[in-house]
Amino acid sequence: MLVGMNMTTRSDAAGAVSAGAAVHLTGLRKHYGDVRAVDGIDLTISPGEVVALLGPNGAGKSTTVDMLLGLSTPDAGQATIFGRPPAEAVAAGGVGAMLQEGSLLEDATVGETVAMIASLHRAPMPVATALRRAGIEDLASRRCTKLSGGQKQRVRFAVALVCDPDLLVLDEPTAAMDVGTRRGFWQSMREFTDTGRTVLFATHYLDEAEEFADRVVLMRAGQVVADGTVAQVRSVVSGRILRAVVPGATAEQLRLLAGVTGVELRGDQATVDCADSDAAVRALLAGYPRAHDIEITAVGLEEAFLALTSSEEEASR
Amino acid sequence: MKTGYLVLEAKRAMRNPRFLFFTMVFPVVLFLVDAGTFGKERVDGTTVSYTAYLMCSMAAYGAFAAAMNSGARTALERAAGWQRQLRLTPLTPSGYLTAKAAVGFMVALPPVFLVSVVGGLVEGVHLTPAGWMQAVLGVWAATLPFAVLGLLIGQLATSETVQVLTVGVTMLFGFLGGIFIPSAVFPDWLNIVSKALPSYWLAEIGHGAALGNHDTATAVAVLGAWTVVLAFAVTRRYRRDSARV
Image (cartoon, rainbow over all chains, first blue to last red; front, side, top):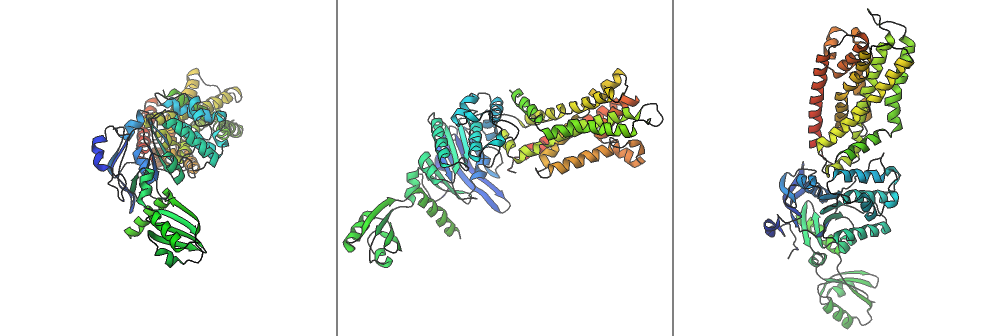
């Protein structure tokens, strides 16, 4: 029910839940000259949800995050965090954020930086706890200039975490991390979300969204094009993919099989898009008994992502 | 709640060796060189040694340059996105700006103190106790608008332009205010312009410590007015500018 090809999916229920919502965006718009960076977004996130904000570059993710946090003012619409305007929620100390392209103070140590942020908040967690959760206890006395890209990201995570926020907003949190660090990062995120906190993260990595988010919000050209669980978003692009080695078949012949919507053939290796994979595999084996190495997979978030972002693009032309 | 912030800011200001050299050591060196060259002369129409006059000039220069540079360095943390991060804490714009101005004001004291100590102990400058008070504490207090002016530059400049802009404004105010050259040599129109500048009154407080003439009321009024106007401008600018740089 939450999946749609356009942006109005959640707005009906929004009014009723806005007061209790962790994040509530209504009709949010931001234009820079002719560029409609954010073009009417409605989004409600309940407390405890872990939501991934996906979209290609320029989809308006960071602009949305900026308006949500009160760093920029919407041209139209409204953002609230736990029923309050962003500035108020931030002043109350309930919001932690890791912004894109943010860097650290050059002439301070990691420990000092995190302690400074902690000192500005009313009810922070102990600095040592924030450092431990971010996996950087051993870097506490290191100058921020002497850190690798991944280490800097983890320090910024500690900075976001130290206020013990109810809402954590992360804009491309794992951009500079290697695989191992990313894994560690998401492990500590789990530890955090297990306590019922709300997380909104923008990412390019679809596997991260698939693995860690309860819910996926897909943006394109300043609008929400899909919103739902990973399974729901995936199902927008219905069907499965059948791969098989089919000696002696042509693409035209395979396309005529029952349940098949598209065929790609490289040598004998066929990749078949299926509306009904059960029918397709029966028809394939009946017509081509020599077919082998058959593999049927569900469409991934990546295929859904590509389908949603590209079909919309073509439609709008 | 804000002391932790102020303490770290103060520590950071003391950590940059280049900043410390140019704000603390440079005015002393400049004073020693100038005093060696012109020190034997007397200020026209008085018995005051030119060394005493120069000491007050260089103390004033060191103080206002330190205050301005300290504020202007916020351009770097603005460019680095750190101000955006701070905006996501309960630290208010005025809290942030006040802390930064306080640090700028604080780093203005050591150069005044150092130049005065060198003047008194090495160059043998004699002032009355009241004169010394004015030369050190008076000059220091008069740098307050420059701490705020530096902050304004920091909010307007990028990390590339901040250095040039700060040096330019320092030079302009230094010359037109009569810190680098005595305002006595100015044509009349420039004298009028000069008297509207905070650097003129900063120099006036310094020179008054040696020469004995002072117009404290006007100095306080002009410096106070600049502080208020600049504080208003920088607060307004900070509130409006939250964009990614």
